[in-house]
Length: 242
Image (cartoon, rainbow, N blue to C red):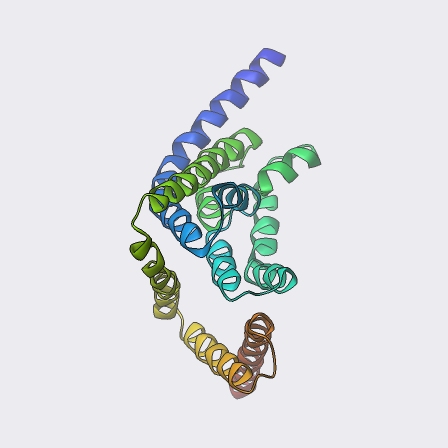
């Protein structure tokens, strides 16, 4: 009986690895770019790899690089990345309903590896998602991200100093690349981005807040305003149908 359980877990783990291959391949160029930009931002290879090991969140790591380049304090960086990753609470809750019953420790371990991509693959899988499957799916994605971050740093270190310094522009290009697809899918994202940019500009030009707190405040204010307006619109539509 125990042998059957082990064989089943191994089989599910292999299925998870296979399902995660495409994610690992997709992560490679993004992680390489992160490692390269981390080098130009001034991080060491140890700090770069450690960030990927501990954080394992693409958008948050790019935001952290931007904030570090501005000399932002650690608390502002942590708060900003927390806000960006709030959606993970919803993803974890949804995936928990689909996962098999298992020890809390096992769920806590593989929940660390949940990203937008691994969540999508797991959520679309037919039937119950097993612990072995999640470990395989997350592991190959995690290894790809961490290893390619280190490789990207080494590539960046071999570039001429002038080119390394100019690569800081790529950080803003990456943010635009992350933002535009979301803006195409939802007009709400357009309003959110525009409001956040306006608030951040006002806070920065008036010196009302430091650069780090300006970003945090702009993000929170724009999110609250957009959601409030959306709520009012839904309420008005509901009253109109009555």
